[in-house]
Length: 359
Image 1 (spheres, helix red, strand yellow):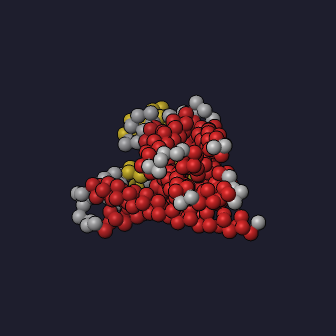
Image 2 (tube, one colour):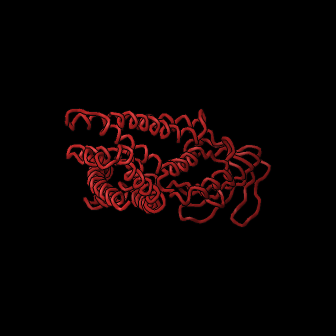
Image 3 (cartoon, helix red, strand yellow):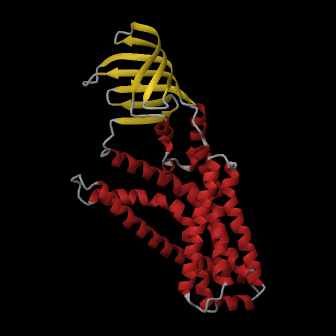
């Protein structure tokens, strides 16, 4: 019992060392790539190098959500190949351990790492992304045009106008109020409409009345009024295009809020399922890394293992994207689209480990 604990502690410690090194490599690559994008964005602004670097450090940690499974895959391959080449695997097997026994300690470790990431790290990265978008938004050309969803409704700011709606229904904003201001931000008048068709940027307002700055109705029972906006139904639906700003602990409330406002919650529910499945996604990667490293004998040519790892990563990435797309288009239930790739990888990996264990 004590011997098993010592061995498992050693395996976890060595795996963590390798995982930290691989994480640093991925972080460095992500930082360099994003830095070039930020420099390109700010090429017309006199901001120096500090701001692009600062924004890159804010944004890159959020990329780890998508990179971490592949970090675990390559870390696991490196770890298992290392103990394989130093004949530690042979020694462990002589002591009575199988391939399954060797892989169990890193597997439990990555499950806890996945839970810790979602529960503690993800809320921090979401705050960093919000800071990133707020800072970078000050340099956006369309910063006079803003939109958000709150508990009080849907709010849109366009130049000198502020628009509020209670909810979205198909292509229509319901219970619409348009507040019009002059260039000095003095209130001029307000439009009240039962609905506004926003299928294009030329909105069609129905059952409209106009109220002046003194609160007096100056026009009413207008059956139809047009309003020119830069927003249409597609832009309004993309208000939550960056889900990295929403932490795991906020997802449930945000889903409820979107449902109350008439928005589709498929992407948000997919994000929720992905967060719940994240530890098991990491588990599938450590199993797969064990199959590749312990199940294949490529004559100690590590570049062949790297090639297999890269091909596996690309295949898994596009398989996940394809499955997620089926969920978002409701071709598959959200839960199935998220869990199916993970379960398939786990099943194939377990089969591979059983085969490797029989060698």
